[in-house]
Image (cartoon, rainbow, N blue to C red; front, top):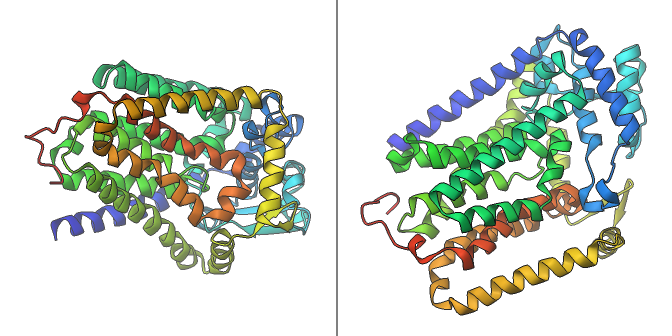
Length: 427
C-alpha cells in the first residue's frame, strides 16, 4: 500500500510539474525568439533537411524534426500559453504527405508573415514536447548553431564523466566496453540533432543517478520510483526516438553497481515500473489537453497508434512492402565505401565476444539478466515495427543497449558475479 501511494503521489506531482513547466515557457513572448528562430531556420536551409555525415545513410541528421521544433515555437501564441503548451501547433504549406520537405521554408514564412498566411495549422498535441522547457528559453539567447555547440559540450561531458565513474567503480574493462558501445552507434553524431539528444540526456543522467544517489540505495521503493520517474521524463521529452536507452543503460549500471541477488527479477521489475511511468504520463497528455483547451487530440492518437503498431511502412508518402523497403534501406547503407570495413570490424568484434563466451561458458548462466536487457530493443522493434523501420536512420541507435549488454557478457570479471549477502534489495 505504501508503495502504491508513493507511486500515485509521484504521478500526480509529475503531471502538475510537466504542465506547469510547459505553460511557463510558452508564456515567453514568441516575438522575443523571432530573430534566433530565423537564424536557426537559415542554418537548416543551408544544410538541407536530412544531411548525411560522410554521405552515410545511418549517419543522417534529422534537421527536419529539429525544424519542426522551431516551427512549433514560431506558431505558439504566447497570449494563450495553456493552449499553446497543450496543443503544440505547427504550420504546413502543402496539403500532402510530403509537407515535411518544405518545413524550413514554411517556418520562415510563419516568422516573416504570420501563421495565418500558410495553408494550414495543425496540432501535434499527442506528445508532451517537454524539450520546449529547455529549447524555448535557449532560443532567447542563442540560435541553432550555438545551441548545437552547447549540446556537444554537455553530452560529451556527461559521457566522459560516466566513463570516469565506470572506470573508478567497475574497472577499466567495463568503462572501455561502454566507450566502444557508444562509438558503435556513432555517438559523436548525436549532438548534431536536438531530436537525437533528449533520450541520451535522460539515459546519462539516469546512469549517474543510479551510481551516485544514496537515496536510490536505501530501499526497493526508491529504486522503483526512480525508474518510474525516468520513464515519465522519457515520454515528456522524447519523439519515440530512442526511448529504450533510458531504461537499458541506467538498469545495467545499477545492477553492475549494486549486484542484487535476483538480477533477472530486477530487470523485469524495473522495466515494468519504467513502462508504467512512460505510458501513464503519455496517456495523461491525451486527456489533459482537451480538459485544459476544449480541443481533442484523440483522433490523431488513434490514427497514429494504429499506424505505429501496423506492419505497413510509408516512404515518400506511399505504402511499401516490408521486403522492398528493407531492401531499399540496405542499398542505402551498403552503397558507401566504408560499409565493408565497418561490417568486417563488427564481425571481428562479435567473433571475439563469442570466443570469450565459449571459453567462459560455465559463467554464462549467471548472465541471464544481460540477455534480458539485450532483448529489450528487439522486442520494442517488433512491437513498434512501423516506426522503428520507417525511421531506422535514428531508431537504430537504440541498439546501444543491446550492444552494451552483449559486450559485457564475456567481459564481466568473476568478482562482478559474487552475490552481496548483505544486499537484501529485491530478494
